[in-house]
Image (cartoon, rainbow, N blue to C red; front, side, top):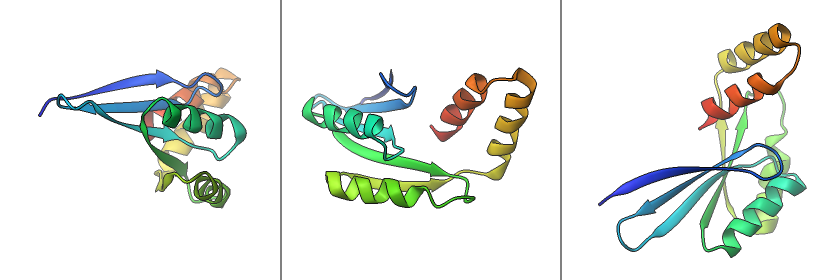
Length: 116
């Protein structure tokens, strides 16, 4: 069974989608980094309307309980949702990058890459 992964930039927030197509049936799953806000919710809904099987993923570092809002929103929207705890070292490296660069762009990209 052939598999391939394609990355799609989120049009609003710089999140990433991972779409996986399986074999010739072209059953497509999308793992969408999900904050629970309006932009990532709209993106999830649009993907589902485009025929993707959408799986929502929220990353937490275990410092805040912001994932609870994302889980509640996912339930309301009717999507599968998973919370993944990222290592604290990823957050510490991202903070170091923000301080070094004096802006968050590279750090946010780093966190997204680690989340994938």
